[in-house]
Image 1 (tube, helix red, strand yellow):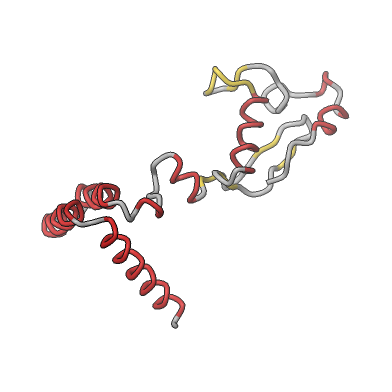
Image 2 (cartoon, rainbow, N blue to C red; image 1 turned 90 degrees about the vertical axis):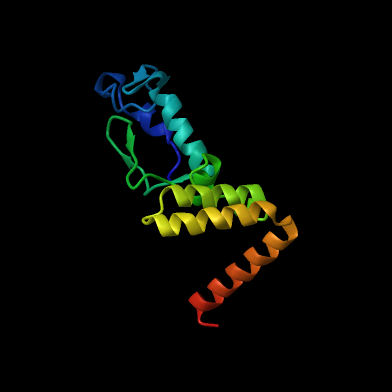
Amino acid sequence: MRRARPELARRVPATRKHPANDYLNPAPRDGLPSFTHAQVHRAVETLCDAGYVASDEGMWSAGGGVTWTRFQFTGRGKQAVGLWPRFDALGEPRELAAILDALAENAPTQKQATYLKRAASAVRRAAPDVIRSLAVAGLSAGARSVLGI
């Protein structure tokens, strides 16, 4: 993502700037009244720099504003907000069991839900080392299969 370019905002006379598009605008942002345009802009860039979000390169308007397209969470961002499992935590029985429980709640059939609940129960009773070994073996086999090794 391209970084903010304050020099562009300085080149455009203040009378020509549209307040809704000006990323330096101190006015509250529509839909986010507790944040200004400038705060939202800096937050998006900070999240992108940290690897939590991604988008196509920003499209700059003549008024100093920027529009991001294909804006989305990255895997790291989804992990930070709890939408994607932290793979380092999969070796912890309670973390993996929680994932299996969530999958059971959304299982397409009752039979699949029952199997997932049983697996969650078994995982809760297992030692962390056993879970880590199984996770590594399963991920390794999956990677080899995908890569054709």
